[in-house]
Image (cartoon, rainbow, N blue to C red; front, side, top):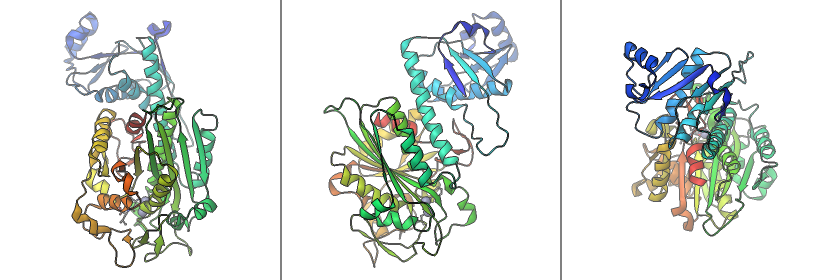
Amino acid sequence: MTIVKLNDKNQSKTDLKLVVAKNAKAVSKNKELSKELKQRGFTFEFGKFTLVGNTIVAGTDKLKEVEDWRELSYKALKYASTIFTEDFSISIEDDIKQTDLQFLEGLYLSTYKFDKYKTKKKTQKITVYVSSGDKKTKETITTAQKKVQAQFLVRDLVNTMPEEANSETISKQIKEHFKDVEGVKVKLYKKKDLEKLNMNCHLAVNRASKFEPITVKIEYTPKKVTKNTKHYVIVGKGLTYDSGGLSIKPSAHMTTMKADKGGAMTCFGVADVISQLKGTNKVTFYLGLAENMISSDSYRPDDILTAKNGTTIHIENTDAEGRLVLFDNLVLAQEENKDIDEIYSIATLTGAAVYQFSDFAAGMVGENEDMKHKLKKLGIIEDEIWCNAELHKFMRKFIDDDTADITNTSKGYGMGCQSAGMFLSRAIEEENIKKYLHLDIAGPAFVKEAFGTNPKNATGWGVRSLYELFK
Ligand code: BES
Ligand code: ZN
Ligand code: ZN
């Protein structure tokens, strides 16, 4: 747990001090510290830390990008935790200015721990004192804290096993979470509702699960709606577990599939931070919750399903289930919202995206170059890399089918992320096609190794950029 406090009398008594310095000149006022650093041959390079007495010196030479400040404070606090393993306090000696937000986010991000399944839990309280105690800093602290808290909420849920985090428990938690939150309405569509709404694909995917298929709709409306207020709609894939179904996955691929709810959980996180920080735009979230399991009632390879908009789909692989759940929910989202400015889908959708973009980046599939450009640009500052997955006309035949309108399994070799996006675009109404962007976060949502400010396993990746996009 980290507490960030503004300028305070106790500051002089903190266990540690953090000095951020670009070169020897920056610390020249402190003669003793200067002398010691010189003796040690400290290079002030970004990423280098050293402890002198109770002062941690963090080098910022060659630190050029705004987003690197997030990593700097993250690493500085991690370094401090190796010195003090119990509770401690630390004061930041320098005024933090234009990079405040990133710096503060890094401080909060450094404290994430997932110990739900550990019998011995260790809690460490870290109090950080920042020295410029003005109103703006105070607001920035709140923004950083809320953005990071939302990310932690996503991480905790994604890291939780399906027996505990399933459609029923998650939808209940979301309802409870927003109960008294101003501007937020939550509506649940349970199995009976989905049947009435002809969401046959969503229902089929969930047929072998002991939990109900559920769509959670979260509507955020700002206090002031003007003609400049935008309406963003986003649909998230919430597969609380993906065994592959009858087209069963190899066991090694199955062990990370509690993370297949990453897209929907990111939606929950974004809704949380948008409502807490009083975003100025309208945002409607649809979380398609289901579980892809195996039983005598499983949907089968070679079944033909009729989606909510009447499109017939040939199931050639039951492991390509996410696009089926998203399909029906995208149709529902467009039926219910006739004033859409932009519509997104977000999902851990394809293994192909992991190969194409690695664990460090996500894929974007869509026909609107401005939308992609905007997100890519925002993502750079958030340290969330969004890459364009190019579509081209020769790929259209990838989803053509002899028996039904389309197949759920790409006929082509390669570009699996794009063909999944192309499949989803069949759920998009003509007038919305240029307003639609599909996001595949299969790589960065749940990672094999820690990187940047992301721990191993669930990262909550995407929350920061989507908040900045929708706010
Ligand atoms: N949930 C998986 C995609 C995935 C893979 C997410 C690895 C995260 C890490 C998805 O449902 C899936 O299995 N997709 C198949 C589709 C194929 C059968 C057309 C895939 O990508 O292999
Ligand atoms: Zn699958
Ligand atoms: Zn899946």
